Image 1 (cartoon, rainbow, N blue to C red):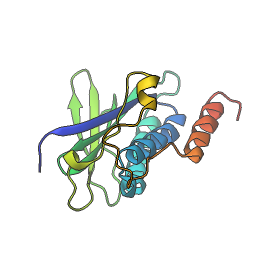
Image 2 (image 1 turned 120 degrees about the vertical axis):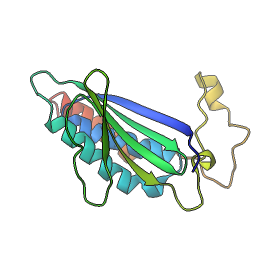
Image 3 (image 1 turned 90 degrees about the horizontal axis):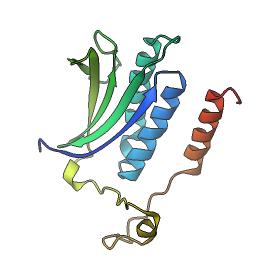
Image 4 (image 1 turned 135 degrees about the horizontal axis):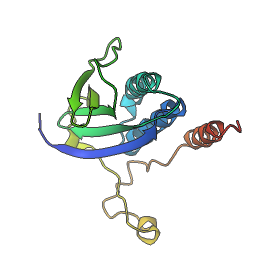
Length: 171
């Protein structure tokens, strides 16, 4: 196993019920972008569980922030959640979930999923992000035509819009 993190993506959310759906969409989008679609079902199941438990432990009168993070590390996808709850991580059948207390009364909860057989974090094709739209419009020189480009799924975008409208009391 390589002990170095190759890619990290995170999302900071307010600990409200809408955070569960937002976190799921974040995981789906990131893993599709990283071409790790086969990990989406289990990663979303774990993420929904972690975020739901964090939201349930939150006070609705003064919601706090939580951070969902995905890391490619060695031969694993690491799903993390940072919040300000205390105690043991929520149990989930079929998943190993760990926790550590961080400075400032914060907690880091995580679970690891193995990458597909024979793949390491260094072999995952990462997206090419350009600092401006003009550069983003130009195809990356190392783009391989035999691997189709992954675009945001229209159903995911519809769910984002629905979730945002529902959170504003309109849906």
